[in-house]
Amino acid sequence: MRDPFAARAFDAGTRGPVGVDTERPSLPRVQDYWRRGRDNYDADRAFCTGLAQIAPGWPDVMRMGRLWRERVVRYLAGPAGIRQFVELGAGFPAMRDTHSIAQEFGRPAVVVYLDHDPVVTIHGRVLLGGYPRSHFERADITDPGRVLDVIGEHVDLRQPVALLAAGILPHIGGDVDPGTLMRTYIDALAPGSHVALTHFLAPHDGASHHSLAADLQHRYLTGLGSGWFRSRDAILGLFHGVELIEPGLVPLDQWWPLGPAVGLSPPEQRLVVGGVGAKTDSLTERVVALSQWRR
Image (cartoon, rainbow, N blue to C red; front, side, top):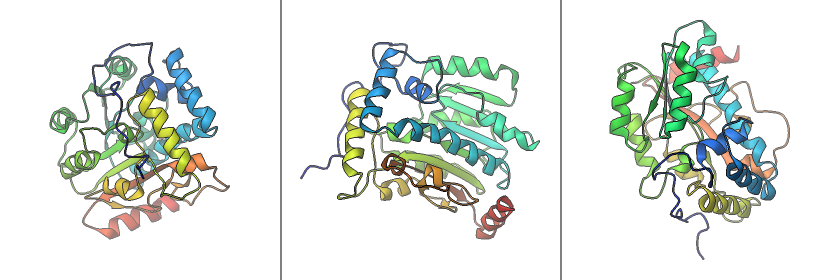
């Protein structure tokens, strides 16, 4: 029997030439629509509406991704003590972005946003004009050599860095192996660094939401040219070289060091998971950081 999650993208893949094509949806604009932004067009809204028709809770899950990132950045800038942040596939900027959250703790932080889309990059640079320690660079994250060169212009890779990949890795596939890609980035990070990522989850065959995930992936691949749902083991493999901190790889609303959210989750919420891993030689450091966060 054919694996419904082994599909390849159609010709309209996201790694091709970028620019303003309002006749078909684009990943940055779709993400902007989910968070109720203004940088989207009819094609993007129609694509999102189609997803919501088969998965009514999907829009809420996509917005959970933003809240998840905020909680993660607060943890990293707070008890984890990170002062350097790199966000892969950042998308259109928002008011509550990484730089504003990281600086809530009263300590200066350097933030580098990276995106392949030129329109997104322009928007980002305009927004960050008043933040000298924050930078928005155009770079294709599937070219880690180039990306690491760009990152190195702004951060000290000999010191701990928080590498964020929220919502972008499901859109890396085809000829690019996301596991190999993440391994290259993680290998370049200093001990004490952290990696935070989210991904679409392909449930095991027979699970109640297996067919829903397959349908969503089909919509993503035919509409955007990307949007792979991967197995739990495959997602865990993206953390090669770091160790997951509590609560591990879980649905987004359950990633909260103070404990999981209260309430029952609809099937859609189980189809996106996130986690944070630490690259450190000391387990004690992670335990202390987490205990401080819980106080």
